[in-house]
Image: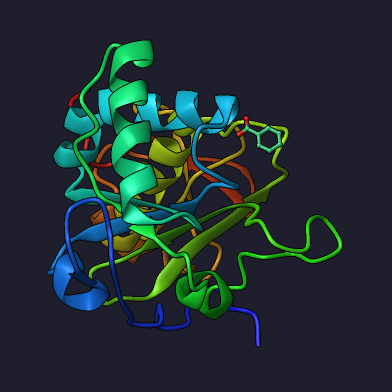
Length: 214
Ligand code: BEZ
């Protein structure tokens, strides 16, 4: 059955460009981004992996480890990584799973036979420190992902885990957020949001991002 939000990310053991990976052990106590690619030595994937490498500090700031996957063997990955480094001006600094036997691709439903019978689509999973799946995005092979959007969602998840807020459409770091509708008690709201809030409608209450300096 396909994975859903809130499910525990399935554990696995698989080869990678950085050796054998036991997934849950590799994740440790932080967040993870697992993302698949149709194949090695393909142009869009090459740019995506370059972008991910260049965002290393942004991922690290959020305590997130990235791990890629494609259904090619380790030797192919190692050759491709050299190409990625050369063409994208980066150092690939995260493992690429070598899922030649498609064990992980099948476990995570990354092959969509009506799109392509053998190759993985661009699946992406964000996994939290409890190993729960918190975001699932699927892109077609022909469209490269927007990794700033992945970081934006991780920011939202980490913020909304900590405070009783949700983030509005197109929200960016530092912008106002909404108070969750389940919070009704005005005294509790005042206590939780000392910067104040604006009730545009009883169900639409905006407040400054709680963890930002004003
Ligand atoms: C690519 O990664 O460049 C790609 C892969 C499959 C189809 C089209 C593009």
